[in-house]
Image 1 (cartoon, rainbow, N blue to C red):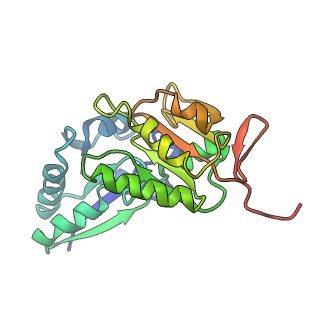
Image 2: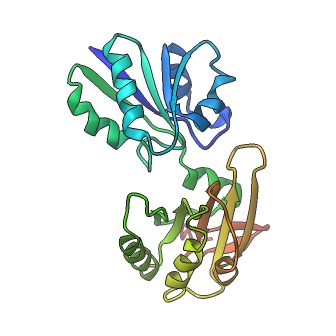
Length: 242
């Protein structure tokens, strides 16, 4: 049976791809993905045939992958981070209903919440909620409700897609909501360009975060009541007795 692989390629660096992801890409004939992600791979897999689309062409991209696999090519659909977290795995299964002759295998990767947490220190050390601030596919009203629920329950919160040219005020709005339930001095962190050139990190308070500008390459972390700064790193204790 023909097969298409849906591969999470991690946050950016080749070294942070899983061994299984690398070995699978090595045996593929065709690699399909968003243009920016494909450019990250070409250096390491130069002999592959690449097919790309721009943003907002996700369904087209998925069908391209299935068409190649249906022809017998060993095909990979690549996503940044993990394919199942704001990635293409779900959409591939949905569109895969049109291609019953093509099997699907999902290969996990290191998502930004984990890669960024490691850069910050141990930001995600306990229960965590991952929330995207992009309202392209999810109504803002629903995003607000999820923010309230996560903040009220004192989750560590990791925000994906915190800002863009059209959503420059969304992080401040999210902070206003979280400040209804979390203290102003709650420890927070920002990591930009995780595992890529120009990687930066900073720790700050929730009050300071509200006044901070980030971009689409940033991942934002909001701690819980136990989160603290140790050695200039953001640490959320698991609760072990010391």
